[in-house]
Length: 301
Ligand code: HMG
Ligand code: MG
Image 1 (tube, rainbow, N blue to C red):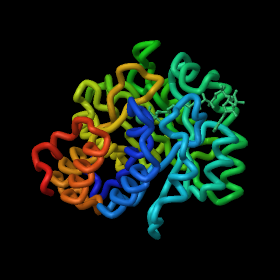
Image 2 (image 1 turned 90 degrees about the vertical axis):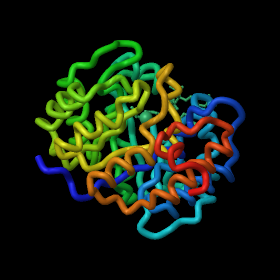
Image 3 (image 1 turned 45 degrees about the vertical axis):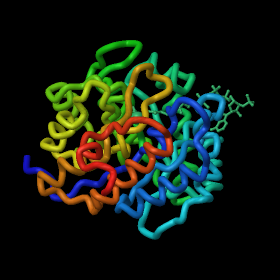
Image 4 (image 1 turned 135 degrees about the vertical axis):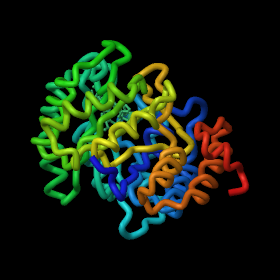
């Protein structure tokens, strides 16, 4: 299949990136400035907050304040994660443009992450999706652990496909396939995608790959070759999942952009501005930059 001419980048750094930062709670002002800077760099979809229990994920406890503080720009989607009805109510009150529900192909991970079975999680999503639709809010669906689970090991691609299909049928407009702990390799990514694409048109799929083993770019190239044109990324490679021990951040937005630029695939994002934002946020957090491209280009961008 020919490579796509455009790829939509879903920036998840302010959510997936920051949710797992150790140490002090990051200030609302820093979160808001990060989102505004990312949009200024050309990101048109930013997962900005997470309306989960602050007992489970303390770094996301100020979701409403973050959403209220953003300098909203037209034509930009400011999205939020919502595990249950309480989360959806928070997201609606905060004027989120879109929300995302999340389950997994692994039973054990689902229990650890959202304290219920896969079946229960899917049942929980039905009224959430209905209520969101009544407010004209689109719902994205995440399926985690698509290439491996920290508790159960290898995943059957048929199980990934089945959960994805169910979430699509229930009304999610897109399914984001999460390699939550970044254990995939290109052939595995292709086989997983082929299994899911037998159930779901590839136009409705996104790739959400963490970079724990340094395979995310290769895995992305493998699925972009198969027609995937939506990629989730995190500026500076921030993050990880608090309920997947050892998982590192998502693939860095800068690294994906550099690769796509080299392939002649358009995204609408300004690499220099993005790199400047990447150095700014790692400075604010006092942590190393997880993007090779940002490190190569340096701080003066
Ligand atoms: P639970 O303990 O079963 O829920 O947790 P509960 O309904 O019994 O409520 C317990 C307490 O939490 C109550 O408070 C609720 O009010 C409160 P209390 O009465 O004890 O004071 N509560 C909430 N507060 C604020 N917002 C809410 C909310 N819901 C309940 N929405 C629950 C179930 C789902 C809430 C919990 O397990 C949870 O919040 N889990 C979130 C875990 C999480 O955020 N994980 C990271 C995101 S997923 C991810 O990173 C993967 C992804 O990136 C894709 C990939 O990489 O694969 C998306
Ligand atoms: Mg993730």
